[in-house]
Image 1 (cartoon, rainbow, N blue to C red):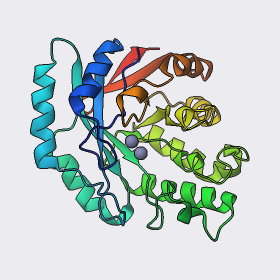
Image 2: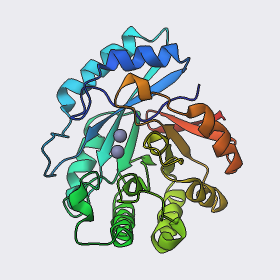
Image 3: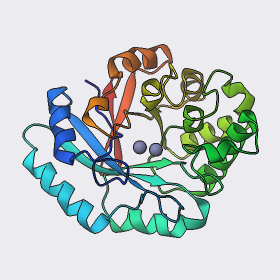
Length: 265
Ligand SMILES: [Zn+2]
Ligand SMILES: [Zn+2]
């Protein structure tokens, strides 16, 4: 099965799953390697603490990596919550620890995660989606602290009508420059199967965006389930493998010590 490069363990504020359970599930699914990418969203207001305890995380994961090295290659990653005003702090984290792979994700927009209905108050769904993509573009322009951009159209998972009235063409003025910056700077786009799990019928981002990225010359593509428990690990990976081929990709990308390696789809 494709290597899962986006998954969470009990080090994330919103997961109770021991890292060893995720690794054993990945072995059972015949993955040759995985990357653990626990949340690190700093300077956010939330009931849940999304700050990663890096002093404990790193030695803990290194120990697991050694323990399972004969069965699976475990890479140590992180999912960084991108925000422009904390650029220096984000860079410090990436310089202080030798991650194999860093996902940059937009979770909090104007202080609120679209996961919460409050994000959609006082604006139409289209305005909310527009704002999400606009802020994403500002962050991608300004921040260089990541290897792959996580779930680019994450916001449509949570809109009042989800993706029923969603057409990425309506936001092309933001999406196209995001894709072009990723390509120029040698950064990857993530195909996140969380959207399929949330019942959208599409990954995040949707096929139109994945196809557009490829058309523009995008080659670096990571694949992740965003699993917070073992049931979701590798979710719909057989399906997206074929889907990505129809979008023009024949390879996907894995990372070790932040260097990309290509594997056939
Ligand atoms: Zn995320
Ligand atoms: Zn995630």
